[in-house]
Image 1 (cartoon, rainbow, N blue to C red):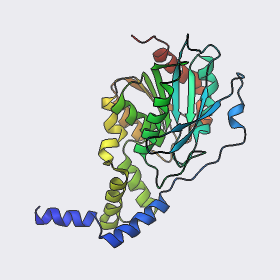
Image 2: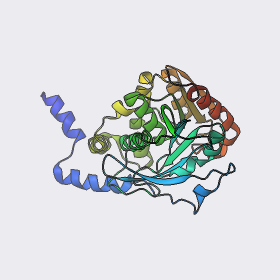
Image 3: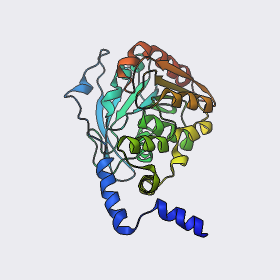
Length: 299
């Protein structure tokens, strides 16, 4: 190792006592808030089909609160396609519940779940984009054992960090027919750099150490999990949806992601980062997108 390399490494990594202090402060500062569910939220449905609650055991031993809505026609003789939805940071599965009725009426099952340390799921020391993707994988593994679900016709829907997670899963695991990404960021390093700026943490020395430590903790390099770098590896169609007034993730991120798409399109809607108020007028477009790619029988 050259002297210049050693110097660069020392600037990016701290001594053990400082590292332990930084670790504790980061776990506290980056902990996702836990948004509670509204009482009885899963029982209301204009189609009369409530969500059935169950639990999924994750790969890390975590318990994931999960809900399933099936079309009335679904059974072992007529298994139906499914869309699995992944909420964003600090949210829970109910924040994507508005898509349940439109999809169920179109003959597509819907699964919502709370990522670990969110909603009604069990707690862990930290949350991360890769852990969101691992939780999604655990839910999909459970669905493969359900005779009413056609696991060869799977669609994914995600918001923000959840969108990055579904893109990561689709790129690495495959087996997905269609993806809808809501308010996705282009690169987690840029998200963290914005966080440093918001907290007035200088990028040099301490900022670099924080970025390196976060990557060590989550066990992945930012470049390896960035949606911008995952999209070229996703074979299925991807619909990117982004709010024109998004103050959290700039619209320019959506255009960069669109340029990296192999198959798919970009839908810009009126709204901020939380697209719940903006999706209702466009729910038909999302349902048609999923329907076009999920209702075709597997070859």
